[in-house]
Length: 125
Image (cartoon, rainbow, N blue to C red):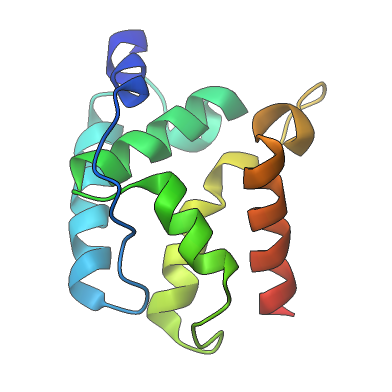
């Protein structure tokens, strides 16, 4: 499992996943399922840092950059009522859902990432 997640540290493409495109979500879903099948547990059972590496790997293997997608979503140039956009947001924010005791968003994300996450969440309100 660790080898699978460590590969996420490699620099992948700097292209953000297009927001609102069903084909993009299908590609990311396929990568998610393939990577999840290789894990001994579900991605949601992983510690937050491993979950973040998992999501970064999903994006990289799908041909996109997690960081670039996070920045693109933070700009708020998407329809918050679009199901495909919301599904992409759900994947991007997966790392900090159901944080365990001792885990925090501040410990999981860089300052820039945390600002982007907060901008995305504010856009959803």
